[in-house]
Image (tube, rainbow, N blue to C red):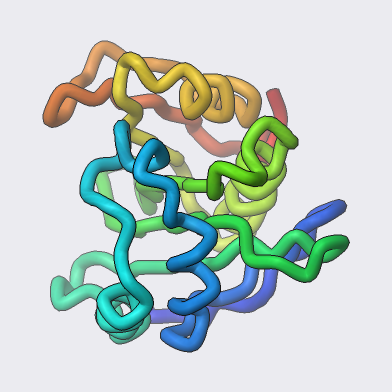
Length: 178
């Protein structure tokens, strides 16, 4: 699959900046609250471990049938990294599909950052000829479900590892809209 380069995605308050290993130290601080990991799993990572993870992500998927696109979320007004958004692109019977995810550090939650970042990501994916966007959300993770609903994803009857699959088929006029 095409390993196309990604660029910066701008929204009203945010810059989605392509992830780099150099973001690890600031992101380790932004994602340091153990409560943040209740639904996403794992524990907060030290900068060195996060740097190693980011290096793997930037290197790309070892599976040639999928592409990994990852961004950090920069809140321009505060000049801070506040979280991440990501998309794993695969081919399906309906064309390109994007499995998306978002995470925003605890100090910045409740300010619409995840929703704005997800909208920006979905609009960018539509420009890249993605036909369907999917997210898997833990059934008890109300905040993430609210983000998914706000950007137009709807829950489906499919479950994977206990999480509900949410989907948004993309058309010329659907990106980023509720």
